Length: 176
Image (cartoon, rainbow, N blue to C red; front, side, top):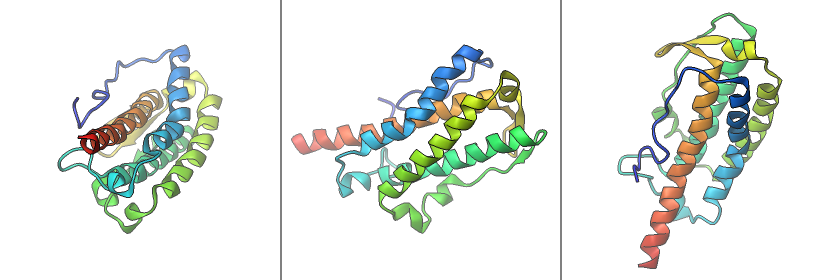
């Protein structure tokens, strides 16, 4: 298994049909439960284990997901209310070592639950034209909300894979 990309790298095909959006929105809706289930039963030692050499700990990953998804939610709202708003990138590695990255994971799991309930309400209300709207990322250029939807459906799976890789590896090591 590729420890950095346990579900594979994100690939953008360049087009999503209206029917193709529903499964992506469903993935965003289920991501909090998937992450919660992945960390269920993990010990503090497992939560503080990196998913790969040089990678974040499970705890940092759990706190990163709502950080990232909050940024995305705000980007959706900006793109829906402004024409090509400029979006600033943020230093996710620096965010991952701020003092709140040591908090109990339940804090971020609860935040993720609430955030995704709001986000999914917004996503399910959007029209085809809304998903074609764009924002301008400071590092990546113009990005459509369709592409962002696909990216964040993948993002939840990606980090759930990181958590599960630690859970399985540490269970296997404990069994030996």
